Image: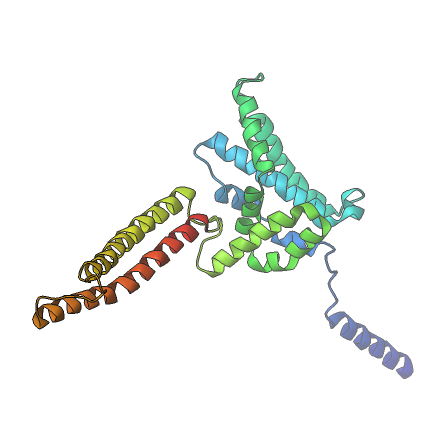
Length: 274
């Protein structure tokens, strides 16, 4: 009897100890789903000048998000049986797409040139706009999520390569205190380069032409002072000192001014094509 009681209490204590141990949680097969945005976040982030404009953008966002789910799921699930949580999120996004494509525009005029056709052209334009798709990634996903899963997107769908690169550029801009969604800094426009080059050309000629004229004036004076034997003639010693001093000073200024003028002209040409 005593042995039975001891065995019973031993079994009870062992069972309680085992139950008290933390049980390993089942790891999700799609951990990247946790980073996907809610409906509220999407529609607060992407707005427009009116409800139709905002709807066109938001419908395109949901289209891109569903496409990302398919890509991250991989071909074995995209074209097979997807996980329940993947299907649930796709259905959530798909419901909003259906609202925009049916309820939001139901009062718009139909036909080939109607407002409904124009609305679809606008939202389909967002579907194929690489910058817009990069904006979706940059604005709706955290930097930690992007660092983990953007390489997966790029690997599984080569068409995403340009989009991934645009999103990474936005990350670099963010590091430089530029907000997400700001376009990458662009170079100067053609007209700006034309204006700068034109100003440099004018400045270069303003410096170069007078310097060349002064150099010609000095050599001309020296030439006309020479007699038939090639010897320079002066009215007096003081006249010689005065004239040669002025010409030497002018000659010292001419050479650096000519060099500076040519350098400015070279910079003008380079800046035109930079």
